[in-house]
Length: 421
Image 1 (cartoon, rainbow, N blue to C red):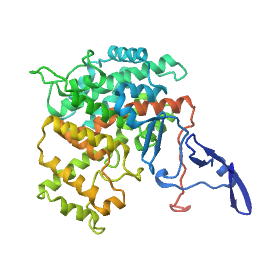
Image 2: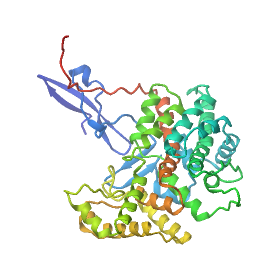
Image 3: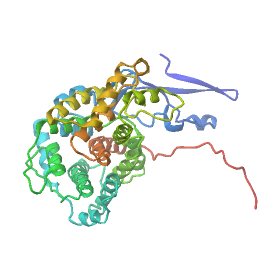
Image 4: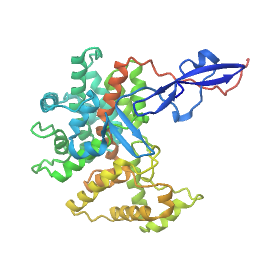
């Protein structure tokens, strides 16, 4: 195989080296392109541009493969806890029992937030979107933990990671309790990481909290499936912000804001809003399937197909089974969920969708599960953020340890040429 490509320009031939990843992905290294030719590349949305080398997540959209640190997502969802997967993503290996116990104990010690955080939370109206609340509270953690992280110190890095893993689910749960008008719950350190989050989310002041294994298992799988997804919009944001040597909390807060967008983390909320609209219009799924196939109709079927996956989203296969189990366990009878099942059935049988591989994706099924659990639609993206937290931390840590340069894309200027007063 050639180890370079040749570019002919302006009478000169320039050789650009090829880079090959561990899964035989190939890229042209253009770091010296501008110095050699005066040219830059134009790639809106960076669809063809690799921004970094990373050893965290491998994604093959054509084959429908997703792996964390080499482990297939199917194996992890079936056999690991979310905290084990978080350890894997951040530190590179699955934890030993002793390492997992230590991590849980260290998180338990940090599972309090400063009481003044409540003052900030109280200042938001109940109508505030919980993603805006979460982003603000995450930024506020900087003020309560002002010391910078020495990325060369394993102890400093570990302590910062533990602190964020401990306090972030509390902030997520408090954002939920705020919009529901419920009193705030504190962590119960006798529970597992995911079960404790369920406790903080759902426990009512006049009732005992009883874990439902099916619900906690569903939450565990949802968090694992969202834990990382290569260089997506929010992850790229975390790395770019962190490349300026902004701190971990500030970088994560920026990632939350990026995730908020309806084209990214807000997609599962958009699914439920679409289903509600179909219900309000009479619930005729065939009508909306026809609208989705009509090129002249602006209607878009949310939760089907994926920008990256050109096959069935591997996460959707896992969560579809979980959705069926949860709905059966809870005995849910919801007309909106009936509409979702109708759309799913028709899409999987309709040649138009099958030929174009427009299968239901993870956003479609995650929204269904969250609705079945009684979680408000505006909270869906907050749960996505909690799942994505380990991936963001891992990506930030990798970027800083690799001493990557500050992110600074170039542009092609198309404005006015020189003018005079």
